[in-house]
Amino acid sequence: MKILNTAPMSGAGLKSVIETKVSGISFTVVDVHKFPEDKLAAEIADADILLGDFTGNTPITRPVVKAAKKLKLIQQPSVGYNHIDINACKEFGISVANTPGANDIGVAEHTVMLALACLKNLPLYNTKTHQGEWLFTQAQRTGIFELNGKTYGLMGMGRTARAVAERLVPFGVKLLYYDIIRLSAEDEKKYHAAYASMEEILKTADVVSLHLPLTAETTKIIDAAKLALMKSTAVLINVGRGALVDETALAEALRGKKIAFAAVDVFTEEPPPVNHPLFGLENVILTPHLAGSTRESGMRIMNMALDNLGRVLKGEKPLWVLNP
Image (tube, rainbow, N blue to C red):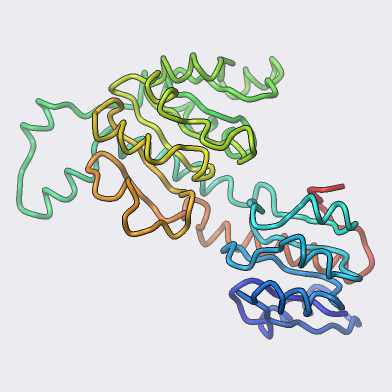
């Protein structure tokens, strides 16, 4: 059997790990990270399994999928899978699986960290203290804020948002959430969360974090009009997908103090261009899509992904299939 490895990792190392999970099965691993579409299509023609690229730099396009003659599974070693043409995979009968829940804790902790850092303007006070400036009285005058007692809005209420909700309970926030599917009354009680419309959350929340999937409907769902609904003291956090937000409109809102602060871990283009509109603004925290990239989550992701590869090598059905 042939496994294609599109991830930026050693195929030899990958093979040795898989061999600990299966025995008596002969297979090869071929490294194809960043292969152009035509070369990838040629390699996939006789492949049985493909390990996806967690960097997204090796797209699995329709022509690539069409060239696969015997592929049983594309296993993505991450939660996101935007670089895979999942509709084409379904059309040609190829299962696509990801690793749901593997990085929920990391993203949830990062989200809460960003909320606290924004409310306390951590970047400014860290930088100025390093520079020898003692801004104690300025902080008292201009204000830094507690998360306790604030209204916190979750846009999306999937696994990651629920992990955020659990971590917000001790902070004593008023928690609102929006999702196309409302939680049961039992789950709303469990997560101490009240359902609200998107507009209500934007108008009333002190902190809003985005945990929505990227679809045609959610692309640039936070645009200039939505940002105009927010309080001038509000914080916006995007740990979902970069294209959920109109980044130019967000930069203009921050520059004009229409909202107080933002924190962004994901960008429409990654890495972002050097002239990205959010670069250089003092009231935004930027991190390089690392919210879920903890050492612990990386181990969970690879264990889940390689366990699933092992299942298919042994003739079993894969778990976590996205396109049944």
